[in-house]
Length: 216
Image (cartoon, rainbow, N blue to C red; front, side, top):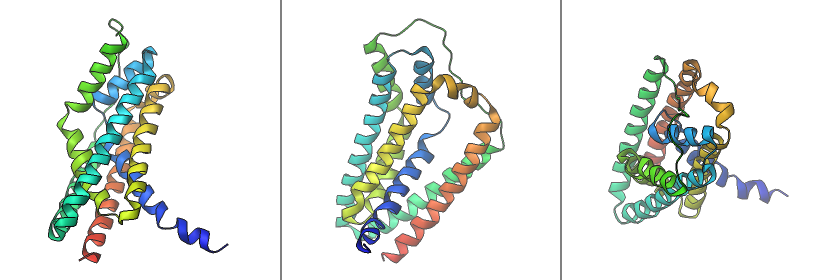
């Protein structure tokens, strides 16, 4: 009876770190989220759009973790440098989130305009997802480098946590659009959310720095 908690204990923190990191990066006011919200409000190809966005994130995250794991495994000094760079980026990102928390902002999506065909909706989802350079910085470089520094047997759990966060967010945004849209239109809600994201990013930065120097 005592072996079960011991076997689970290393998994949950890694899974949670991937989940929280991915949520912190993806929950933001941007074109992709506005498009998913719009499709949800119109009830138009919601499942396909949500699935595409979530799968794209999962593929990029997996590629980032696997690719960075190979690179960092061959160059231990690079692992420390990437960890410190990742921590610096998380600290900067957290600071930006805290600055946003001081300003009023909102996420709105218009239901005006002509409806989109299934192919056109997926094409726009692909454009908002894959033509945004921040997507590669976030998923491949940042999430990939942090995930690659997890123990080899637990990297899959990190990827799972990050991917589930993406799937859960897009699912809630698309299928819950009619309930979430009024909330996201309130600047105060985003101020609170950005405050939580800022604090979380700083905590992850500190944990990453500690892990980096413990591995030296």
